[in-house]
Image 1: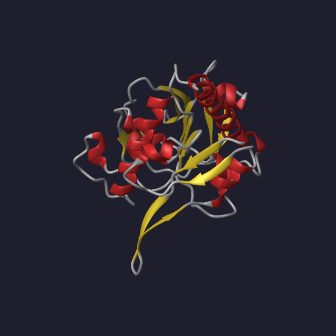
Image 2 (image 1 turned 180 degrees about the vertical axis):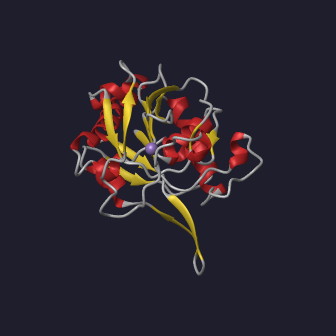
Image 3 (image 1 turned 90 degrees about the vertical axis):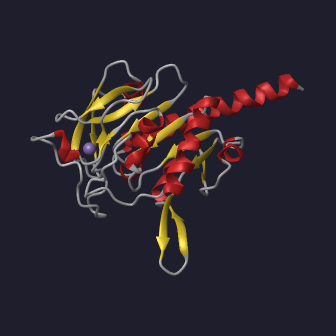
Length: 251
Ligand code: MN
């Protein structure tokens, strides 16, 4: 059986029908076309029950984390799309996945969840990095979503370097927040020229990779961006196989 990869959706409020969850099909397509079986995870209280069935976790992009989660009492004017339900669900999934050693790929909002979940913080708006900040928030249009917006410089010898096999990555950019203080154990392994952290990983864990860009929007046009999904699926197969062997040994 191919590795089962759980993907977190966005949570939005519909005026008529209440809370809905949504996910761009590019996420499920990226997992499916790189050898995995994607499944969308409905936000619910019991994250462990879902994790028990999964081989890997993909934390997707979306709206902002509630700033009090990382100690900011002020909400910046550009901070948007907060869902306490989504925050609670994803932090519970992250905690459980880390405890299990489950492979994790964290994209855009996902890298921010990974960082805040480990005790790190965020700049609520990328402009807070100061003058000379690159354009990290391109207009999100179909014609441009796969187009590179800036280069990411990769730390040599990192997991990110192994995944992409290159010293720089041409990445798209649709975020307005960016990592500030790093969470416990995280290593920043990708930066833009303005000093923004664009990638992190967790040394000592089998596979935990966070990227601030959207490889799922790029991989069909720029094939090197399939690599994060391919590596997540490969690590998830190892994780799932390990569990199966332990199950057999326990019998
Ligand atoms: Mn960027």
